[in-house]
Image (cartoon, rainbow over the protein chains, first blue to last red):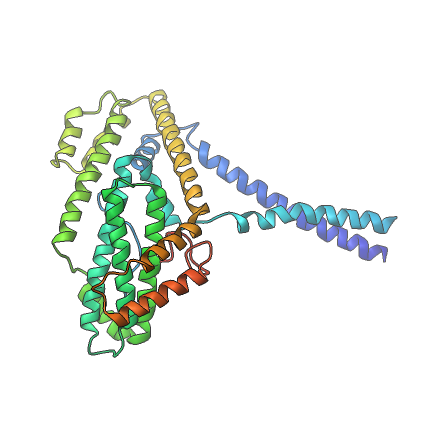
Length: 67
Length: 299
């Protein structure tokens, strides 16, 4: 009985640790994205930001195809 | 005692997992393409552009639909459902034009009308694929691909002019940060003598001649503006999603009571039935279980 309880607790700890690790990993990734250029700014980084402010003349609204 | 301890431990762990499991399920969603499209709508010219583009794409689809009905006249007996869907799409087009005339360029209006148009286009496509085989569908798709008319061409010119106006405004803001950026070049772009690509090339060259400190400062400033703009737009998107179903019911009711006189009686009946079904079966995101506002249009 005691072994079974210990087993359940161990499994739950593994699940909890996995979820925690998953969340920490993805939080870190999103933080990296927002600060990726903070140490090394190149002209391509600034061009990416500028491109975000402009609108491509071929850009369209999509509502799917009729057939 | 040990059993109680174990129970407490299990409950603690389970309760800590539940929020993670539920987090994404309960959040309102909108399709990524629509989110991308509304990003420029924080600016009045940008909002005008998206409404004009929606008017254009719906006009194209109506013209394509009319041509499809002609092409399929000998292939299938009953096109009532298709005609009814097309007539509803025309009602949506009228609402887009009214919104434009009334200067109602909000993100909410765009999401509402785009969702309705997308749902109707999906319905049309689904119905047509039950009436013709894949080979016929492929043939007629090629035949209607490049259909155009005067209205569409006029819309193209208006959209292009507004896009240049929008980009000109954005370039003026950028020009304030780049001392070396040529003002006359921006004016040439505004007048249609230079392409956006040429302007971007000019900015890129100016950026390459700047020091790292200058680049860092300008990047931060532009990044900050972009983040603020995205946050404002996101708030409006969230607001639009919240009242979506209520507004959809009102729009359907309004259309139900305003079916044009010229519509054939049997098509009118089909339209009424279709709109009643949509009102009764609608959920939070536009009438179908897998719909999200603005989305679901891809075959």
